[in-house]
Image (tube, rainbow, N blue to C red; front, side, top):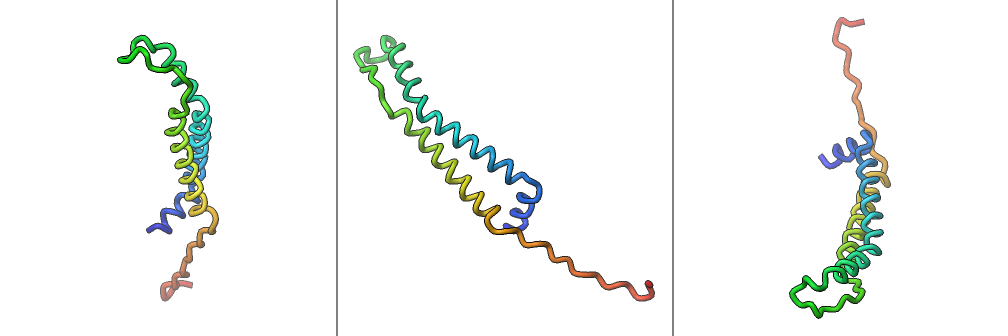
Length: 106
């Protein structure tokens, strides 16, 4: 069953498309590692007076980057696992057994 799934994913290029999508998402989340703290800092600075505690600090914090870093690492790890499973070992060719000719056919 798993071998059939692997064959379908490799031969129909769905596996390659999925791997490309995973790599793109991993790179996008990695880029968000750098932009999330800046966006968080701007938001806290802009809306400080509306917070429950108006005296909270608007300092720059890297806590906003941690979820994006976790997403990026997990997506790229999943991509590596799928790449290794799908493409590092070649798919075994289908063994088609020759059918015997029916008697009287020639």
